[in-house]
Image (cartoon, rainbow, N blue to C red):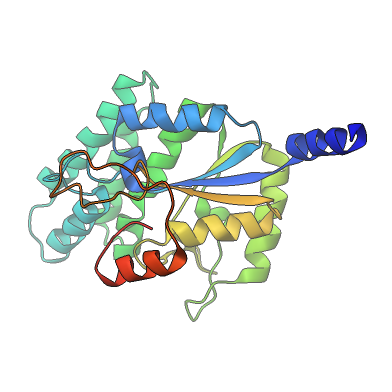
Length: 258
């Protein structure tokens, strides 16, 4: 029994976990604080994959949607600056409330310069994850690993799995603790390539595979699977138990989080 307990403790200490946080989990400074608490309560959570900031409330906009709007306006020679300013304010509020001291104005000047020079849609919509990753890495005191450098795509748009695994495993081995922005990577020419929307989940699984993680945790900002729709019923209680069959039936009926 003593040897079993020693082995269990050793395994717990030596575990490697990938944790991915969705947009609602990183929507504002308060959400960042929750994420930091989650990561710090378990030392094996060494590598973090992040999404762009999501909605802070029901009538809010996701940052990725605002970035897509910027691209559509710019591509039709319409004024996009007001929307880009909204995005900068979102990130600046997180930067200020957490006292991170990151010079976001220079980063947004670079984004604006690239828009004026015909930046691609993939480049622009990926900036939400990119900027959020920089903020989160600074807040956690983790290394920031730009996904462009480690997530690689082939010329035909498919993931270059072998090269990606090689680059990721080598980089994260040196990093110790790191934040990798989800959703995007780059092709052989260095151009930004994105997964489909929601692709940060895919990045998380790629990172987990590359470092042979013991566990991949995919977090979202909900208290559990609820007994009723919180948009209809106020403060519904979470379910204690639910079967796979019940989950399947609920998903068919439109339950968005499982």
